[in-house]
Image (cartoon, rainbow, N blue to C red; front, side, top):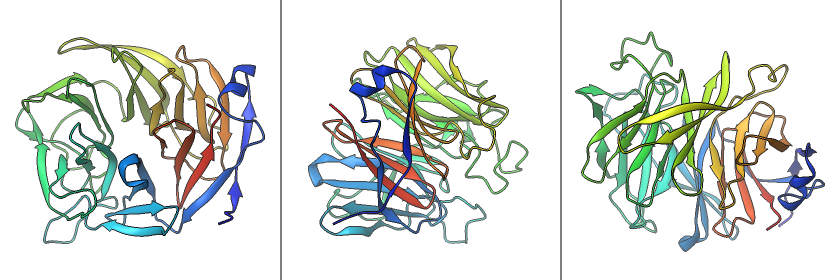
Length: 313
């Protein structure tokens, strides 16, 4: 099938040539969504899953069948209509047993789907719902380490007013947390104004966290201790946003430490030291990135679109 294409590559460092062809364009493999998010490539099923957050739906894309509804509802399962504009699931990932784990805006929790990947059902087991007796706002994105700890961000975007003044907000900050295999919830960082995308650098000693705040459009590195984290600035795009759609949002890091991060104007590609190698320039706001198992393909959620772009590996 021949797909429409979009975007262009901006080469800022010759090192980009080893990562992506500067003449590459992104294929539009799916479209028509309200706000696509949380892409996850599932190698065992040869499928891409992604959330449409306002539609409270997870979609499935395969080369053979295109786009199909995979799971609905995905993030809010209450009986009353949700008051949120973004009630659905956001970030998606697999645990070590191959179960689907969801950041659920509407249910305000991290949850595991209680059904096989090939027979999805809207049954969920809560992994964490509260910190110090107070409900999370709307878990947004998450990543596991090899020890089974689950790290996640909790901004207010799934609340009805989507801000810190929302009466439904119970925790007085927007946190980065860890859930231990035993179910304990540990606060790692509470001063990032809008923590969003999250991923480990190789070695799992450092986390990269995006801040989707227009006044602090930054990426931060968290150096992880057993129950603590120290923060440093990775890169600031606060003064590089003019006339560009999007903010630091979802991101992925490959086995070489290369960062693919949604940000103003598209996908920013960094080396592990925070040097910008280049960008995948897009007209619409990008929200997140997934990498295929062999890291030869990137999938990008791009507002109403889902994109696929080939990488050089």
